[in-house]
Image 1: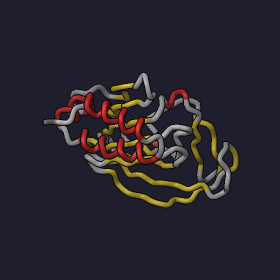
Image 2: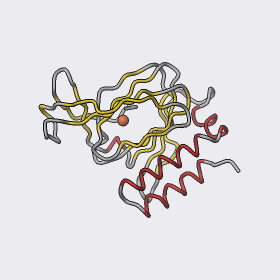
Image 3: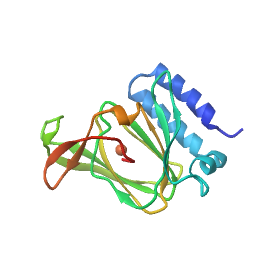
Image 4: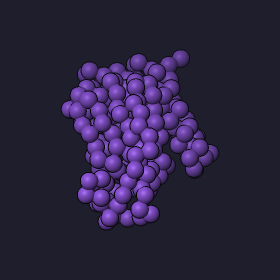
Length: 180
Ligand SMILES: [Fe+2]
């Protein structure tokens, strides 16, 4: 039987209740890959007829995690950023997203002077999901037509986050959430 959004949400609840730490997030990543293997879900969430933009498929009243469909209007490259006190799982559905994971080398955790080094770059292909844990820094680069499903630990609209300018060597607070 196909794995549905409802089953995914139920299984995420169990996984995150059983494991409050990184193991729970890794389980969500694996479950998202299972969900992305269901073509009916992919079509309804991010298929050709899905609305352009970002929309919330689920916000969990109990645990606070959010499932988002991203039907991106155009190609985009984000600056390195974190997800503050939240985590994020990105699951590619259509085309690809190039991911770079960064490490902050100046010892800081706040806005202000900041140095980063890239530690890992790879391409997320359809059906594959990656986990970006609390405090992890990444940047994303995707072509026109790229679509993905993202799960965040909390609604990022209410989470203070940082973005990084590697040329200016500084971190600034992101005021509101975007597709990054
Ligand atoms: Fe992100």
